[in-house]
Length: 334
Ligand SMILES: NC(=O)c1ccc[n+]([C@@H]2O[C@H](COP(=O)([O-])OP(=O)(O)OC[C@H]3O[C@@H](n4cnc5c(N)ncnc54)[C@H](OP(=O)(O)O)[C@@H]3O)[C@@H](O)[C@H]2O)c1
Image (cartoon, rainbow, N blue to C red):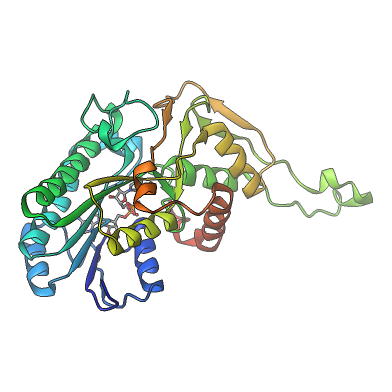
């Protein structure tokens, strides 16, 4: 790797891809390629073949995928399975055919069996049934991990798979119909926050309590007891750069903080960051999902990489980004 190595970041406008782009630029890599889905539809084998033989990248990072929460997975099982397989099959296969030396495939912790022991170790892959709510997506991702492993085994090329835990950060999806839990909470708490009421009648004799209307309650799904782990997306980007610059011994590595908290603790942290003072209502008629999901990150730590950004700082930076960019997704209604 040098500053002129030609690096193609598939999905460079997404939350993950854009963070990787910024991290590479910051380290002086100046030969980066990115294509939007309108410019290059990665589901098309022909278009991907053309792109690879024309551009001839040295390195490929696959951060392109159809992603979404439980609702989106449940409503579009075919697209979650098929489009993700098409995207990654084309990228992996044409990387091999175009002699790309290093390939980084990004998956997610949902590849591990639902009842696997916690924390999740890489070796638990394919040892039991998957969580049914997102099995379409998980099966597609597992085939990507296996394709990279097969290339590594058969052709000796440095193709690796990084499995990040739940991510959050700048450029996250704040649309409440398809977002993940953390950005959804940021938006809900923010929108439930009432603006100060400036009224002559209310602001007399300095009765501060009456100067502000009370914040609206926020209703959240489930009981709040499940435990989850969250990684700031810039930490993942840092891990990807580390993986590019170092030769790994194996195919599959978890990327996370190794620390989890309850959804209730997460809600309170976000509520505090946003400055919401109303009530939190837990709708226990809604499902909780898996009780605990924590990555074992010791393999990545042994390889020499560790997460750096704590949850308090990460949520503050994400909320700041939300405030600066909320106009761009205002049209998406709750
Ligand atoms: N978000 C998380 O919490 C999380 C956690 C673990 C792992 N990951 C993994 O990280 C990767 C990226 O996720 P993300 O959160 O960054 O998603 P994202 O913000 O939705 O970005 C996805 C990107 O994929 C591109 N894309 C989708 N379909 C495409 C197609 N047919 N042709 C070309 N490009 C296409 C999009 O391009 P355009 O913008 O040009 O349409 C977009 O840039 C995924 O593999 C995901 O599994 C994410």
